[in-house]
Amino acid sequence: MALSKALFFFLVNISFLLTFSYAADPLVSYNFEVSYITASPLGVPQQVIAINGEFPGPVINVTTNNNVAVNVRNKLDESLLIHWSGIQQRRSSWQDGVLGTNCPIPSKWNWTYNFQVKDQIGSFFYFPSLHFQRAAGGFGGFIVNNREIIPIPFDTPDGDIVILIGDWYTRNHSALRKDLDAGKDLGMPDGVLINGKGPYRYNDTLVPDGIDHEKIEVHPGKTYRIRVHNVGVSTSLNFRIQSHNLLLAESEGSYTVQQNYTSLDIHVGQSYSFLLSTDQNASTDYYIVASARFVNESRWQRVTGVGILHYTNSKGNAVGPLPPAPDDQYDKTYSMNQARSIRWNVSASGARPNPQGSFRYGSINVTEIYVLKNKPLEKIGGKRRATLSGLSFVNPSTPIRLADQFKVKEVYKLNFPTKPLTGPSRAETSVINGTYRGFMEIILQNNDTKMHTYHMSGYAFFVVGMDYGDWSENSRGTYNKWDGIARSTTQVYPGAWTAILVSLDNVGVWNIRTENLDSWYLGQETYIRVVNPEATNKTELPMPDNALFCGALQKMQKPQHISSAAPPIKGNRLKLLFFTWLMFTCGLVPIFLH
Image (cartoon, rainbow, N blue to C red; front, top):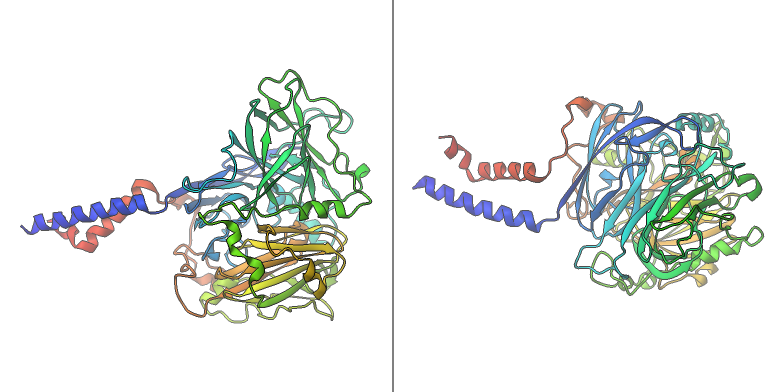
């Protein structure tokens, strides 16, 4: 009788579990083996960083609210962190993959990222965030699809294509890093890659023979969604496809007002998705071009990425000169006006069924204001450094979030200035103290002579204004308070400012930085610390069980070797473990053992 009763409750629990399994958000898992391979994207053999032997790495393809597990095996000869650019990591900066929140994954070690793409859609990418490694590869696309019940604001495309563009050096990342440490400039890049490949030989003089180029095959009379990411070191690129319009549809998680562009400037770290109609004559193939912007065109002509768009019924190779970039060498406003034209589609649903514009950010009272000003590199303590508001960030040996968790003192200072310092610049670990549920206005003032893009982890912010000159209180009169695009990375033109608004509703420690790798490496970053005064797991997830320890907490780290690492638990193994837990909870295991 006792056994029958126990079995009855066991079956009830199984029924509940099955219901729970189907009702819960699905788990999607990936295994990443990060290693060096030899490749010759510009015709010169060099060491690049591959994932699962691929350069670029595989595309992560998930759906809104999926739980994502990425098991990373570090086969490099140095430590590693993977950063999920634009993925907001709601309630969990523990998984963000930057030094301020995570200890690095040591060489020959294994670590699993676990996070949820909560209430998010769009086009993003991932990359290694340490040691200048992004200059050697290790990057790949990251797609978050709408759930089936949430419509997209355009007809379902006939295909989805990821394109990674970026400037490239034939010197490996460790050599580039040494140059920066020695106070040298990196100089001109050696080329621009499209999906890890060099330029098509459109010009026999500029492009040597034997270079592999990217070829994207499409069917005539179709519409494709093309997701383009600038994953380079520091060069803004103009993207275009010969004889085709690019209908802009989305940028870093926000659907845009749909507008046609013949070309679009895509700055370092930015992502866009376009709808491409294959409606042209198939007498030839067509050039895909990514060329440098805001540079001396004659010197940079060889630094141009060229691929091929190939119709399945094409009758010949691409012909003619490359489609030209915008001719605005003496017109500084062309690119900025193009950026201003990118607007939020406030009538479209995002990850949820309500219109995106219901946020009404323009009517929220600003509670905190920070002016973050950059300027050309300068010497601090005898070393060439990059600064933000007169401070050059020094990464602590103990990550900020970990120091908070274990109350380790004197790791950082909560004294980042609201306005740029007027005295000498200094190097220190200074952090912005953000107010939970505050609404922060950040003015990014670029007093450098080169273009910068700025990224903020954990958030999508509203780009409300940009202009040349110095920002002032009167500049607010030009703000777009209705449909400014919400994104995670924005450009700031040389000698200009960009203003963003951000709602600090995501608890954690979040990186804000320039995406230009050289300036980022030299200290142009800080963190925004957002703490809920009420201790609760509802606003921030607990520290993960597999957290790594370093710095002052190094003694807490248990040894590990890559050969002993287990793959992430998923599918039936996860259900089996849950069944086992249920049996122990219900006291059924002792019965079965009898």
